Image 1 (cartoon, rainbow, N blue to C red):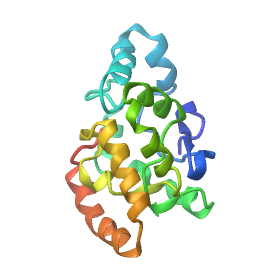
Image 2: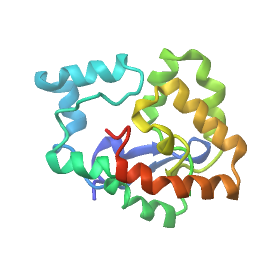
Image 3: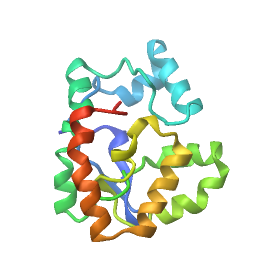
Length: 175
């Protein structure tokens, strides 16, 4: 379980920072490599200029990592976060603090959606994950997260849970 990477710090409900647990899918110190190793500088640039904050092809991801990401196996340790009360089974994906900061500069009209999406606990699965995942650009993703926060209900959660296995099996939008 990855717990030393600085990218494991995420924003929870009301912007509270917590440590997200995941199985490691990238090279060790991948977060540092993107900024310091010339082989990965394009990843750093693409994250800051692309619309989703996740590069289409990230060479820091291991072969094993590609598989566990495609099928969302890397998310299993987040059940620990659920048990600790930091996350819910269903909710918006927890954002990296720097991701929200950078994307808000690129998409200035998203601030109200960001605030709204942070009113609920983040989830292991959610509306965005079952509706395109990383294929959805940030401005649409944050609107979807805000929509979920606004419309949150047991019915909506059950619908998302029912769609989750297909999203995991198909790997659509996974990166």
